[in-house]
Image (tube, rainbow, N blue to C red; front, side, top):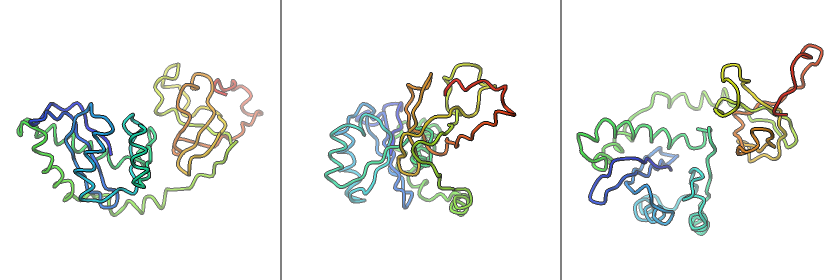
Length: 236
């Protein structure tokens, strides 16, 4: 689940945001108009009154690490319900890409139709209907592509790894000649099979140390006979 915000106020209650929920098994979307300045209890009451009566209690919820979802009220409430809370990582669409893709579709619909309907709240039911009825051409190929390309990473604590700079825009120096991967860094611990924590240093030590394994490569020892001219890595 995630929010669409910065929407012009709509309806008699001046809704200016929309909570987007996607049920992972059936891919059913749920759009709930709300207010962007709502707190954790507001979100909990919205789920309890508008979603739980139709779906039952949740087994698992995937969301970002926003203050609403990391608050003591939210975590303790779902602990009582027996719901497992999973937090997404940056640049890892495999975790919460389903909701993010639905948000893109909703924003596109709002841009096209909100002026005609004068209120985004009016079109939410129509958007939900079309999202449920649409057929994605990639459905038949998802499992095939995953099975062919997916490999379980073989990392362990203490290994030296490099990680991609693709999403880093604040590393010093011009972008074009910048290394595609920086490191090596030592793995501190693994978080399941999808992410790991490294010990950062230098100008990267203030970044969050947990990265998805899709951005990680094992560090291979350099052959000094052939690469003796290469300067030591500034991040080591």
